[in-house]
Every structure is written in C-alpha cells, then in structure tokens.
Amino acid sequence: MQITYLGMRILRDRNQHVLYLSQKEYIGKVLQRFNMEGGKKISTPLPPYLKLSAMDSPQSDSDRADMAKIPYASACGSLMYAMVATRPDIAFVVRVVSRYMANPDKKHWEAMRGVMRYLKGTQDMCICFGKQGALVHGYTDSDYAGHPDNRKSTTGYVFTFTGGAMSWISRMQKCIALSTIEAEYIAATEACKEAIWLSRLVADLGYTGDIPLLHCESQSAIQLAKNPVFHAKTKHVDVKYHFSREVIEDKLIRLVKIHTDDNSAVKIHTDDNSADLLIKSLPPKRFAHCRHLMGIG
Image 1 (cartoon, helix red, strand yellow):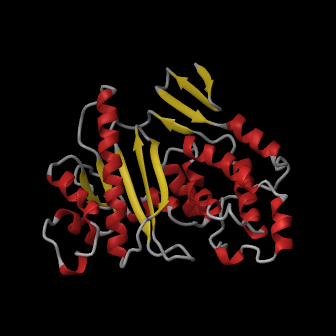
Image 2 (cartoon, one colour):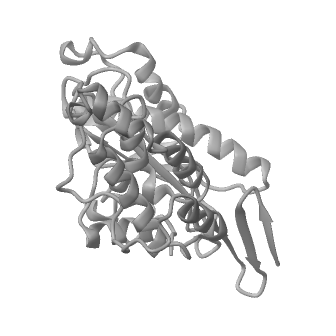
C-alpha cells in the first residue's frame, strides 16, 4: 500500500512488516525549482573542511545587492521541510546555513547548493521502520563551543523506534557551556525531555515494554545526572537542566554510556553514536555509517 501526504510518500509492505517514508518527489521539485537537476552528486552535505562564519557575510552594499537576487531564504525553507520530515541526515548543515539568511554570502550559497547536490544523489533514500524491536532508543551528543561566532555548543539527539529515526534535533544551545561536561549534560537533559514524550506516545499507540534507553558518550555527564549533590564546579548550571536527575531517579528513562548497554549482549561502540551526524560535519565513510544507524537507506 502506498499513499502520498504533504509531499511524503508512505509505503507499507505487509509481507515484510516494514514501513518506508520518503520525499523523492518533493526533493525532485526542489532541485528543479533551483535549477539543480544537473548538479554533480556528492557523498556528504557539508565537507568537514568547509567552515562557515558570519565573517564571510558581504560587507559592501554592492555585494549585498548581488546576493539579494539569490533566493537564499526560499531555498533554506525548502530544505528545512525535507529535514524535519524524513531527512535527519541534513539537519546539521541546514541549521548551519539557516544562520545566515539575514546576510548571506556566495560561500553560504555554495554550501546550500552542496546540500542540494547531496540530495540529488540520495533522492531515493527513505526511513525504514519495522526491522527491530519496539523500543525507544536514544542517542545524544554535543559539539563543545562549535559555533565559530559566539562559541556556543550544539545539542544533537536522535531517537529510533523499530529501527528507524522517529525524532531528531540539531540545535544551538541557549547558553555558553563552560566545559565539555556541561555541554553534554545540557544535551542529555534536552534528550531526556524528548524521551519522556516519546515513551508516552508509543504507550498510547499500544506498545508497552522497557523504559526508553538514552545513550551518552560522556561518563562525567552521566554521573552528574545521577548524582543529586550540587558541586561547586556545577553550581552555575541552570536549575532547569537538573530535570534529568529527577526523571532518572524516578526510573522514567535509563541514561547509560554508549558502549555499556547492560540489557544487550552486543555492546554499542562509540563509533555507533548516530547523533554525531547532527552536531558536526563528518567524513563520507563515517557519515554513511551514522546515516545507516538512523534507518535511512
């Protein structure tokens, strides 16, 4: 059975017990609209060597006038819809290029075109649900002080259900973290809030079982979340981020280091943290691996 809804193609294979979500037709229309049908295909949406900054924005009126002729904001909005619907693999780069909508430069526009070239080569990819058990699995990570202009960190998390990504985010943190532990702790707290909501959602759908499992790379951030004592080095952390302590104490979620899943015979290695894709640009091989872990193929 196949239906199309709001630009998304939904395909259900009853024999294989799987469900596919894709936006092939929508992506094709976006490429056609911005004259990118003949663009060269690339393997990643943002090369690791390409660093974008507000310093690249045009400084003269003539340069701004030239960029005003380019539909930068329109292209960014088109990519955002693909990102929030079925393509978590472009979440990080779309977040980056959207920072400069007020005053974009040709370098920013080339990065935008790079995303379209990547989508051209992966137009047929979709999220697949149904190949694993009905348990909410979460992965969280942060990029400490990764913003080149204000030195704020990036929060990234992704939750999978029956093998496919069901919720993801790549977002700049609202405050400046003073350490990698704090950045990881803030990211884990944001992921905890999403895990609670998702667990209630799947319960309403009739799925009952273990509480959500959230994986984090930082052992120090995990200990900070599990320790109710306020330390001198963390007393400046906003009270709202200590929400994770309460949900962990109430056993609403399990926060574990990413390679120590106690309920599985197979240990998850740090390289299998799919949230890495949401906080920074990655080499092609690593990018493809994280994309596969999200159930995109």
